[in-house]
Structure formats: C-alpha cells, structure tokens
Length: 185
Image (tube, rainbow, N blue to C red; front, side, top):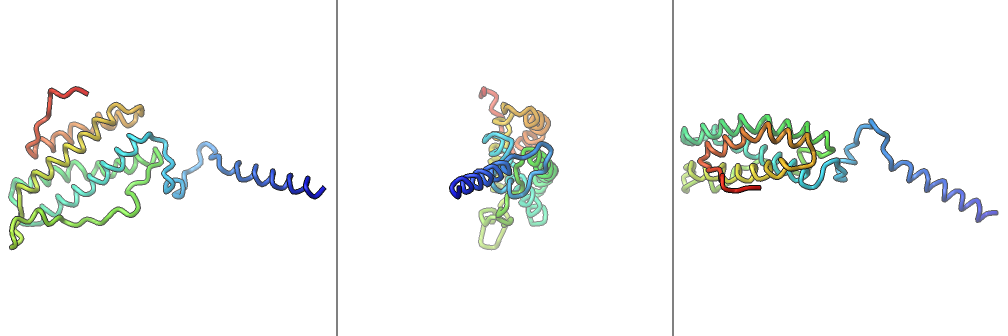
C-alpha cells in the first residue's frame, strides 16, 4: 500500500510540475523567460535584434561624443544623421523585440566608452577620417543584417526592414559608402 501511495504522490507531483510549464495564451512573459532566451523569433531574427540594437545604441552615443568634441563640420553633420536615424531605431527595436520575447537592451551590455583610435595624435586631436570610415564600416554591417532579415519568415520583421532600410542606406551613402548594385541575394 505504501508503494502505491508513493507512486500516486510522485505522479501528482509530475503532473503539477509539467502542467506549470505550459503558458496560457495571453499571459504576460516574465523577465525570467526572457533571460532564458525563450523567444518567438528564429535565430536570424534574434541576431538581427541583438546586433542592430547594440550597434544603434553605440553609434548614437559615439555620434553624440563626436558632436560634443572638436570634430570637423563634415564629421559633425554625419554624426547628426547617425543620431537622427538610430535614436528612434533603438527605441523601436526594443518595442518590436518585446513582441518576440527578445530582451533589449541585453543585460550586461558594456557602457559606452569612446575608442582611442579616433584620436590622431598624442594631443588628442580628433581623427575625422577615422570616424567617417568607422561609420561607413558599421553601416555596411547593419545593412547586411537588414538584408538578411528582409527574407525572414516574419512578415512583421520584413515590413520593419522595408520601412527603415532606406534611412540606413542614406547614412551609409553620407559616410561615402557605395552600394554594390551587382550583388544579388
């Protein structure tokens, strides 16, 4: 009799534990679910959210640093375009990512620190060419992420990319980037 009671108690516990794993529809997602990387987006979409959001935040902060410093008018104009484009994108990505249960910004993201490679000499003269080349490089990486997600199975992500890609390409062009029209994806 004791073995039968133990079996029933164990079975009841198993049903209780397994039953608590199911999330009823409409239930809010807890932060613990988000920390476990349980999402409603595929790997490509997840990488898009994480990469573009991180770059958007960093590029915005770097552009603010450039505008506050002794950069050239050309670098400051480019920085203004970066801020105008990426400040809203970072916030929009946070909202959109929440729909897919992706936590943005990622906990533990490093705080902004201006890189020393933008200083051209020991006196701390700002290297405008290095900043412009940096923006061009980062825009190419962001455009690559947008291009990948433009073919994603999520219509919501496809629509977002279609809406925002022209602005990202405009920043790339402002940094002197050339669109490769011969590449077909």
